[in-house]
Length: 502
Image 1: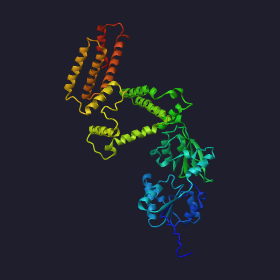
Image 2: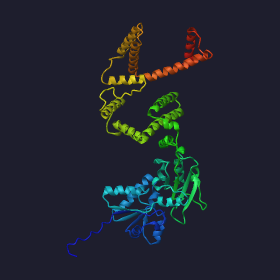
Image 3: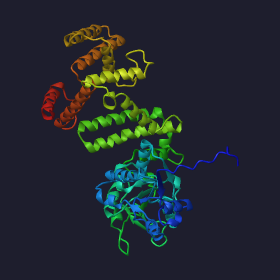
Image 4: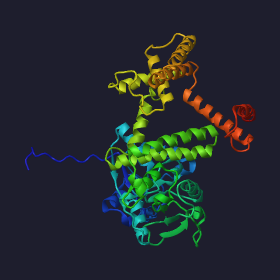
């Protein structure tokens, strides 16, 4: 070999190696991982409450554990940063191997924090994988005839289950169910999604031939199960929940989406399969008005029901769009979320506003930027709006560009003018002219309502409701029917009905 032959550089030892102990004994580890643990210049275990710790001790491997941090920390929010800081302090002084139960990247918050901190501080690190608890739990369940696709599994931390979202339609593993207190909290969180009698599998010490055990129990009893030999939950306990069928799910919008997809499927409901965008228009309008009625009644339970009916129409229309390849309910929710954030820079940005009027001005300005194709102030008013609502919206938009009366008195003068023009057309009997003049009169009344800050649609709706109550009271006072009675009889009945109904 000549003097100029390059000599391979020695690999730089990382400051920190993040290793896994596997879910049970050391026999599940690779030879590389086992040699690393045995030869580590400094080995720190997250906890020695693991079968691998006993085996390392039996092999004469020196290590230290961080169990004392567990004992001195009150909550998990403080625990993981404290564990990470202790490991970093050691790694700044020399190479360290930090070993955690299972796979270092599966459910290990301290490892996630350590990787972020190493990146920020420029510390070198490597991750050495190991079998995770999901592997041995899957094998244990397979022995009971349960073999869900691992790609469908979702994993949740029992210590934080009440603060995370999970999908009950997928097979679920809940890990870190360390004791009965955690099991009780997990049960309460799961009961928000699953029926009381839904079966839960409790798997303990998966992968350990001598200690592995599986028990099946209804969810509502899961924190009361006791092994014949004593004990119930420990740090090697995992819960398995089979996927929940759509018809048994609750609370999740996704459950409604799944049910609607089933109804629209080839084996679903013939009526639902026949519906289209156009056929659902009437139901959207009907359900919206039933929501308004529930609000008027002041009945929260009824409002909840009617909002569900209205939400169904949103999901129904979205399902049709999904089938046609246009969009799905996630696009609908994502679009409105982005729009809300974009149009509220005073909440999600650094813009300051003085009051709600300025909020509305900003909203309109942002909306104009988003819709440059709208060249008229009247563009974007829905054609299908009820006439009074449409008239009010058109009037508001005209006012925004300065087309406005100077005072309410001028509006009333215009009202008198329009009423006079309507009366002037009465002798001629021309229905088209009468309709036009009546329209002018109604539009001016809408502007009166706008000046008074009264919603004309709501005012008329309430008036119709009052009329209905009073008319039914007249019928009651008359003994059932008003037919055949003269106006001289009806007028006093009306007056009494007004007194009775308010």
